[in-house]
Amino acid sequence: MSLLECLIGIALSLTLIAPLIKNSGELISKQIAYEKTQLLSQDANRALELMGRAIRMAGYVHPNAFIQNINSQSSGEEFLQIQKSVGYKGSDALIIKHQLSSGLDMDCIGNTLTLDRTRKGLAFQGFLVDLQTSIPKGSRISGGSLICQSLDRQGRLQSTTLMNGIHHLAIEELTEQAKKDRRARVFKIRLEMTDGAHLYRAFERTFATRNLL
Image 1 (cartoon, helix red, strand yellow):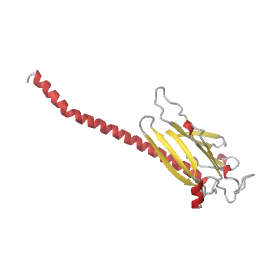
Image 2 (tube, one colour; image 1 turned 180 degrees about the vertical axis):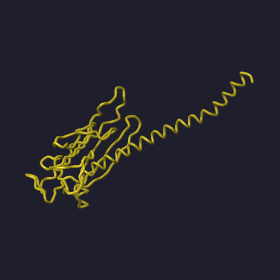
Image 3 (cartoon, helix red, strand yellow; image 1 turned 135 degrees about the horizontal axis):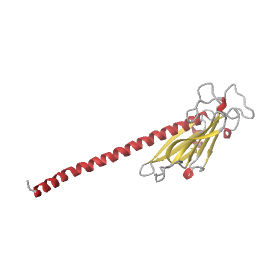
Image 4 (cartoon, helix red, strand yellow; image 1 turned 90 degrees about the vertical axis):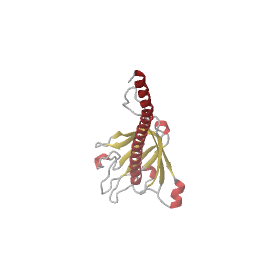
């Protein structure tokens, strides 16, 4: 076989293999994007569920409890606050307070709530979006970080990063819907997630309080 024949054979082989290599590369890229999207969805659902659980607990007062200056008739502002545009890229923040129930109560990072994790008998949970910290030099910033605020065993406020990739957090009270459905206070949470490059997804959930009117 001459050199020319070898070159022609190689060229023909490359012509046949090139589309396969291209298709394989595209499939791998799509698979990576799919896996990243699934991770974003899992993080978003976990974050929304944590905030929804806190909203449902907001304002809970134990039937046998007595707390000085705070009782079941206190204003809802004592137990649930929305701070508008205070976080990363104008994200909202959520603050929840409630008494402990007779069952197993947990904060937003999974700690079992006990009296030593309260202030004046009230448990505290906060959610806000802040700039990412401890980013390696040269790394791409993939949105902000969702921060959970809770109380430690000495009743001191502690902040823990739940997840990264938060583009924006918006919390809106649906007053008209609550009046129409004759339910407790209703809130719509919109969470926008990103990988800092090409992926962007928005998630929305609606939650109603169980202990506040």
